[in-house]
Length: 361
Ligand SMILES: Cc1cc2nc3c(=O)[nH]c(=O)nc-3n(C[C@H](O)[C@H](O)[C@H](O)COP(=O)(O)OP(=O)(O)OC[C@H]3O[C@@H](n4cnc5c(N)ncnc54)[C@H](O)[C@@H]3O)c2cc1C
Image (tube, rainbow, N blue to C red):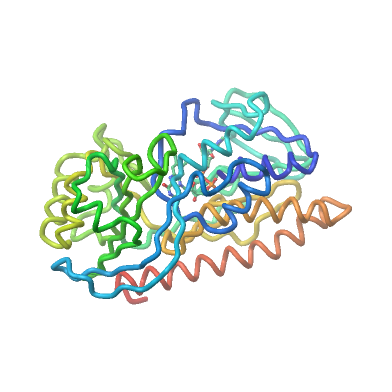
């Protein structure tokens, strides 16, 4: 996302942009729900990509349930949601195919002259190298080797279910609402997102849930070892959770969640899990290289800001390049503002997460 936001923003200002993406396959069918913050919607409309209304769903109420499933609190609140795949699909279609190269893994960047090296030995140079390579960024590891992800001692179990597979009772309970249950050291939430094809009409949507939970006595490695026996660091994809891990979490859902959330988890064919972690870089630029999005800062998902931060990093980078006559001047002013923002967001995410999971610290 960060690479596409930046590519589209800089391309619109007349820069000559090429994107290198390591994944050779199609990313379109992956990911879950995201809060469609204003910066994302503005990006889509200002670049004439899509009318955000066509790829978003809305809630008008924030509701907390009791363990029995009764309504504990209900507050009017206007929220807009979308899905990772719906936004990705639009951004990808807006960037020219001939300048988007898949199956290209960057293995190194040289900040002094903007040289990028690929795994097949190829090299290229650019006036500006934008590393939008995510939380496990190769560029960041090279430029700031001490900036490591810090595990927050809890995980997010996640799932997405097609509306057609849901009972009427579950649809009624969640439709038009952002619904939560706050339990003992856990928090689960759910909201409707567009369907797999991006359709937002009732009947065609998907229900997205996120369940923050402690490891409940298990080792992190137990949870993050997938069906192939590989120990993953940060996530296990849908269909890759080992059975004892998945069945344990399903049983835990039945024992601890309100009935409507238990039903929702039970209906989810392929739940997945992501580790919650904090990541902070000391700065975002070194000479001709800058880090955008998750490559620079990962704030916990309670901030609902990962994708919107990537969009704002891109928009602000374009604005700084427009404003300044020198690349160095543009990057210095962008770095100051965005590093400050990223650090504040990470701190906010820690506060929100520790409070919601009652973890102290
Ligand atoms: C498949 C997928 C699904 C996601 N689903 C959700 C979701 O449901 N909800 C949500 O809030 N957030 C989701 N995210 C995260 C969200 O997209 C990010 O927080 C936000 O968009 C900013 O991320 P980013 O672009 O900085 O990094 P990422 O989204 O992590 O993207 C990094 C990209 O860089 C590529 N890459 C990594 N290393 C290299 C390398 N060495 N050479 C070349 N390419 C490389 C990766 O393949 C990836 O495409 C998802 C991310 C991915 C990749």
